[in-house]
Length: 131
Image (tube, rainbow, N blue to C red; front, side, top):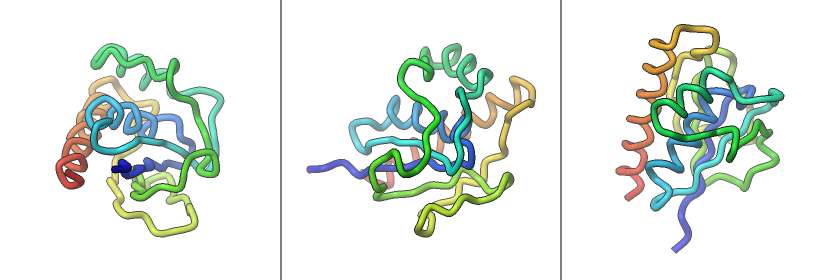
């Protein structure tokens, strides 16, 4: 049986969507394939996200992920917007979910960790919904 492909989408694919891809692989790789993408890219993943994911989960996103546009990933079965506080990208179809997560870029570690933990919970819920 093929696992569904889940795409986590943000404008820049440098922070929340990258965290969701990493946590999707970490917690739900047995249930769905995780991808992240944006409508624009950044030269690197958000350094605070990289640092905190290493600290909290031992995941080095810089080793396994990079900022990419939606045309560089397989067509998703499920498309999830990270939140439209920075503008919703158009990916050629409607989003299945909008997680409405605040962008933690430039904020304190405490706020960053809150967003990471929200993404973790949403990944676990999505895994249960797909099972």
